[in-house]
Image: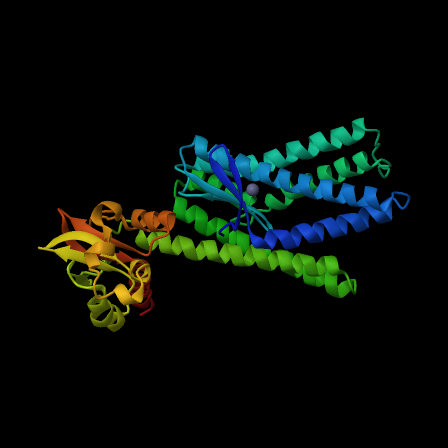
Amino acid sequence: MQAQVKLGRIAGISIGLHYSWFIIALLIALSLAAHFHMSNPRWSDVTVWSAAIVTGVMFFAALLLHELAHSILAKARGLKVREITLFALGGVSQIESEAPDAKAEFWIAIAGPITSVVIGLVLIGAAWLSGWRSGTEPTTPVGAVLLWLGYINLALAAFNMIPGYPLDGGRVLRALIWWITRNADRATRLASQIGQAVAFAIILLGLFQFFTERGNFGGLWLVFIGWFLLDAARTSYAQIGLMTELRGRTVGDIMDRSCPTVEPYLSLQDFVDGVLLRSGLRGYVVVHNAQVVGLITPHEVKEVPRDRWSQTSVQAVMRPLGKVRTVSPDTPALQALQMMGRDDINQLPVVSDGHLEGLFSRSHVVRFLQAHAQLHSH
Ligand SMILES: [Zn+2]
């Protein structure tokens, strides 16, 4: 998930908002206002709305702290954290690689729920200090805001500890299985199967509630959450299949050896008419005297006005070799895929000793996996 609104950086991690966040923020503010209005009919509209907005903002600050806890522990274990994005269903930390061992995975996963429990208890304690007593409704706006936030943080921790991979609870479970079996792939497979079972159970419970207590929309909400969890568990199950298939493979096993090349002195006009439009590929390696000198894609061509294409050479606009990321045939395939994900590029020229060996791209990986899937099914 890519953030569309950047908020800044905390501890070197960029913090951003996805568009869907704005919709949910509005819904939360509206439902909080309705809630405060009902439970405290004597409050003025200004009080109700300021309490709702302050609560909403603090709720997202608490979510952010939960994600920061995951990210800071991941960084402490040497993993790179790219970004934290808040979206409609909470937050995601984009941690670039897998935890190195079961213990690291355990602590990275549990740091978030622990943080939410601590925040929850501190806020409920603060509500108590402000005069609220358990078993009663808070009477002051400050007490109401603190209490609601306290409960919601405890609920957040509880929800995240559902043992459905990829939720935090599922990750904790995976770390424990990993630690016992000493096999990361098996742990993920088992954790995501348990996750699917848990998701089914939640869906059934929701349907049961909806049909036995007619018009119980809490039941429908459970069905929705269960369906979301089922989808997430299935995706991570499919991902682990991909990881197992690619582990131990090198770029050389997968790359396309017959990749298209162009001469640096070709004009852009000839390149477009004779090469680009004919083959329709996204990247071309520029080769001179059997040495790789750069890379050209439709993106570079578009930078030049059309009427200058015949006077401009490929060499003038290509990305020179020094600015192109390349890999060698021995680079592990997973590492190359990570590089492409990190820098958001579609293809990597495969070079050894300055000679072009082939081209590695996402579509080659997909083709490779499809061919393998067919072999397995026969
Ligand atoms: Zn979490």
